[in-house]
Length: 152
Image (cartoon, rainbow, N blue to C red; front, top):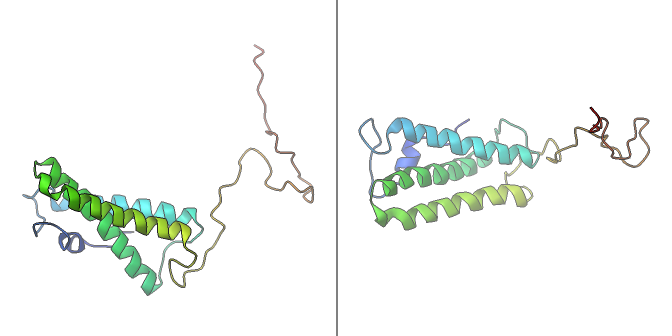
């Protein structure tokens, strides 16, 4: 789910441009940047235990801002590649703001307002049991369920 629009990204472009089929990047490319960044954001959101979709209004405003910064960084980087080195500091600023936003989701409890975590967000082992205290009848001593030898 995209959390911002092309117009949001345009608001951060320097100099101000309106993305269309003739600009670099094009409007379609900017839409791709928005999707790419929102996908990365959702991986982060899920990895810390929040469920999707996010519906809390305050959280959506924050996610919009993060999506806008990350997407604008990619769009402005395309301008830098076009040979305009003056915007490279702006690209770094946008990208730093994006990274700080992601880091806040990862590390600050309640970063998404009233959104409730649906899991711990921790990855679980797929080859051993997750209960290591002996209380589970399927208890595993954390050895693999399947082993392989070099015998042929």
